[in-house]
Image (cartoon, rainbow over all chains, first blue to last red; front, side, top):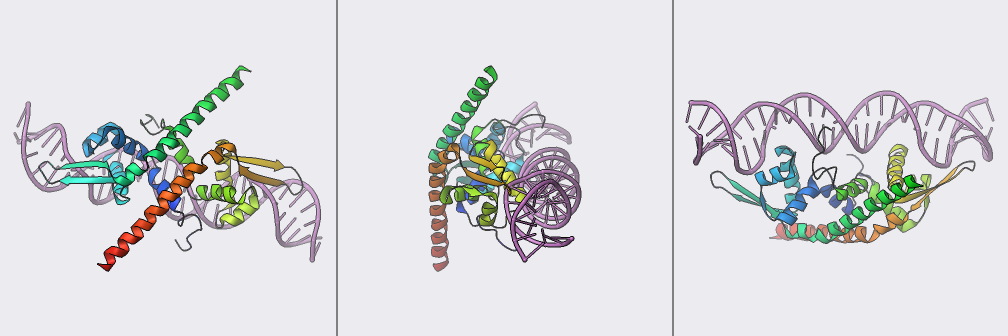
Length: 119
Length: 119
DNA sequence: TAAAGTAGGTACTTAAAAGTAACTGGTATG
DNA sequence: CATACCAGTTACTTTTAAGTACCTACTTTA
């Protein structure tokens, strides 16, 4: 890219959002957060429908950003366990707030459309 | 899509993140939040580098989600003013938290790499 | 000895998003 | 009488991301 558009590449908020967005990502974090550390295969089964390629991509992204910790045991067969890193846990309150807002909006919209339909 | 993947389409957090992510979006909200209501052309100039098409798309998305309010005056030439709607303002604390976290991580990473380079 | 499980990697295809350029109607300006 | 401004829209192209399928090396199980 020749000219980095202002507010796009430079914005640190965007960098974090870019990390979280995309299919599966928040769901992966949600599982690690509520179910605790999980192995690759477990995670894949629990997310359900995700391919190994995309799961690997997401986990690498999250690992590079240090939201998730990867523990590799060179046993046979190898055991790779993923867990929430401190930075991942740091996002929990924000994600909780976001979830509350999102759920409330969803409920408001349903009530609003129900009321509008009844009138 | 045949089977809606679990945790993907159903997740309300994802719906809001999907709204905020993407180039320009948080920057547009940032301008409306810090500079106050702005007209289409002003917004376009202030964001800088965005095309009318994409800016319109983003504003329509935000308007549909009721984060932003659109005021159309059928004068000649027409005046269209965009402002933060209540829902948009509701996100402010969360975006502030997110920005603080993002900036701190950025700083930590810079210090970390600087320290690592010095050693 | 063939299959299945471990944790992925690689190549290819497809679909969605983003960007580019030209166009709209109506008026005021040069 | 051609141009520019306002706030977009439309058609088209390019880029990016996501998805599909198959591959690795090694071991245990049937």
